[in-house]
Image (tube, rainbow, N blue to C red; front, side, top):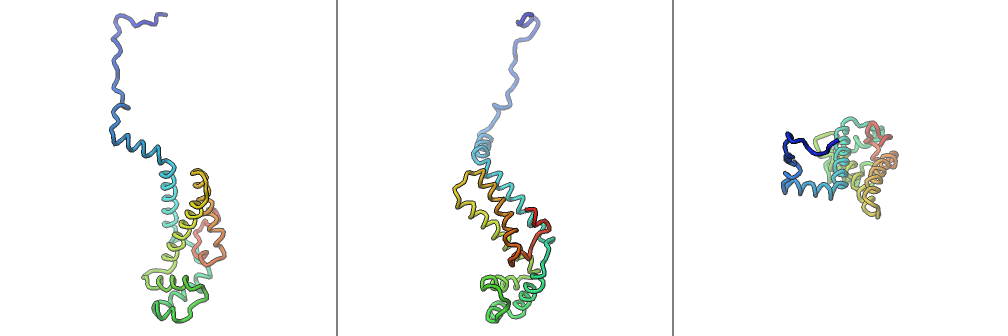
Length: 172
């Protein structure tokens, strides 16, 4: 078979190469994504998990501890105010938690909403600081960050912040 082109065939016409139409902005974005792919993925995954948890706050399972202790204490702080409430011995939790309850009592919402936000923030900050302190590779950090978040539910199950368990707390 003859590999040469026939006489009636047109010479090779180069088709426009779309890859050559890359602008400086496109190159900068590609470089940014290539350089920071792990961090971008981490932010996306954490953003999705944060969104899922915030959406599920109203669906949390309120424990007997919450109903029998936290709600009456918050109502008492609402009656007395922050200063008078803290001057009176309300509850048997440690002082910083009582200060938190006193401030939460001033908000015009159910106490579990701001408590959920406080505990959620503490969980993410704790997981981030624990992972940041350990000299791991980036891939190992992502894995351990999820493990720490999951273990926060298991660890706090008997503590006061277990009052705000999402419906799937055993699965994280």
